[in-house]
Amino acid sequence: MFKTPGSRVAGLVGASLNQKLLASTQRNHLCVRSLIQLCRSEPAQWITFQHLNFLKRQYVTKNIGGLSQRARPKQEPVTSMLDDRDDTVVQIQQIPAIKPQSGVVVPGSEASSLQDEPEAARQAHLEARQWKELRVDYSDLPGVYARLSKIKLTALVVTTAAAGYAMAPVPFDPVTFVMASVGTGLSSCMANSINQYFEVPFDSNMNRTKNRPLVRGQISPLHAVSFALACGIPGVTLLTLAVNPLTGFLGALNIFLYTCCYTPLKRLSITNTWVGSVVGAIPPIMGWTAAMGTLDPGALLLGGFLYSWQFPHFNALSWNLREDYSRGGYRMMSVTHPALCKRVALRHSVGLIGLSTLCPVLDVTTWTFPLISLPINLYISYLAFRFYRHADRQNARKLFFCSLWHLPMLLLLMLTCKKRRPVPEDTVKPVVNPLALQS
Image (cartoon, rainbow, N blue to C red; front, side, top):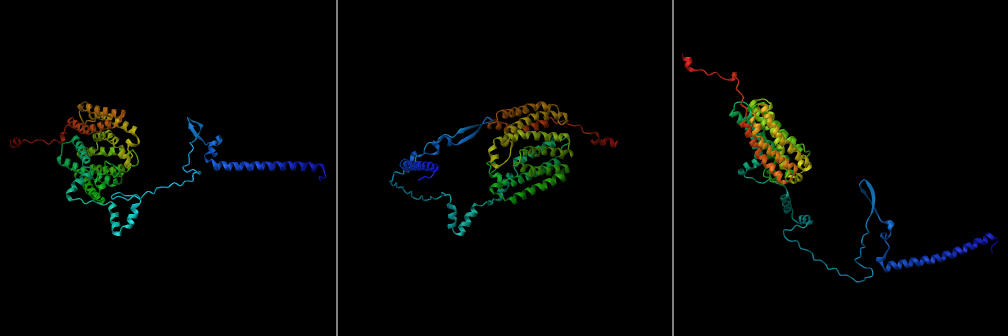
């Protein structure tokens, strides 16, 4: 059959390989059949990737600057709710439809209900959801104007301006004093009204300001702006013409700083607190310039008192209103930089002692003022130190209420210790004796 020995050997090798392949095919066929039967009979014993250690997922975690691997723990096998071997039929009880009760709004049903309503009812429903101005009686307008102009803050501004006028070393002129006070108050009303006009969307999110007139719709925005212009234009004009141009310029500058710098900065940066302190420091300077007509070191010293006093006052106030300011989107020190908020309050509280010492140096008061004002300055510094060490609601509230009586007491002590300057001789009119003229 085989012509050569080589071909005979090749035929023997091929026959042996063929027998081995037929035997392995039968064994493989049996393995496949057994595997299929095992999968059909015991689904819970299926081989999954969780049974293979080398296929477990590895998670790389960072541990103290180094990298380490941690294997994900093996999950418990989840048993199937429906067994393949169980051919029983499970009946599912049908849940009856829930009828909507009156007064309960089902999500997603509002749009369909609006489509089913007639056109007139749909328009009325949409108009009811829109913002609209409330009808206010004319008898309620004074109260609305008072809240719009922040009457308490305006009264504080006028008081500090009056204190600046009283501290000026010139004879008291009641007419100029009244004109300066009225003009300063009108300018403050305009600044506060414009401030509320800009902050309506943000005041509505705060519990402290959600009842303001513009937020509640008691007056229209045009009405508020008209009221602001009706106060600001006569106020600045009165300060410029009836007092002096320097005071009028300071009044207009204060309106600009409060409405165009401080108000937008409240949502941009914490520097708004420093800008607001400058705004609060200008009114006593206006009172001084209304009496003197010039900008002296004494006027800047009075402004420095108001500048430093506002930090413990406002920082303590804003500490308990952090949630409100955060909800309104205002960037205050108490919200974004709490540690800086406490340090600044303490720093400026102690600074009031140094400013009190400068008063007799600049011939504003006698040397008695630093001594008699030392107890109240030490007390507010002590409360600021407690607020710095333990910033809680109670310490913040104590510091805030102390600042409310500290400023009036400080100004009153300053007035009692005011240094009287002698009147120049050239301004003294000679007294003519009528008896001497007859003789």
